[in-house]
Image (cartoon, rainbow, N blue to C red; front, side, top):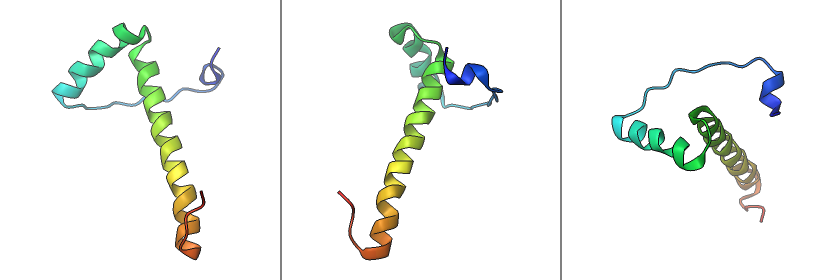
Length: 68
């Protein structure tokens, strides 16, 4: 059971351009996962990427160097 099964779930309406919607409609069959699970993972990956970018940006702005 995923952790989101034990918490209150919030829904979101999302408008997509037709070409993205068509590509997304095919993906659940290929991945054998529900569309909601794919979208949730995409949002999680984006948020993780942004957190990583911020972790580098903050030290860079303070001392001019990135942390490897």
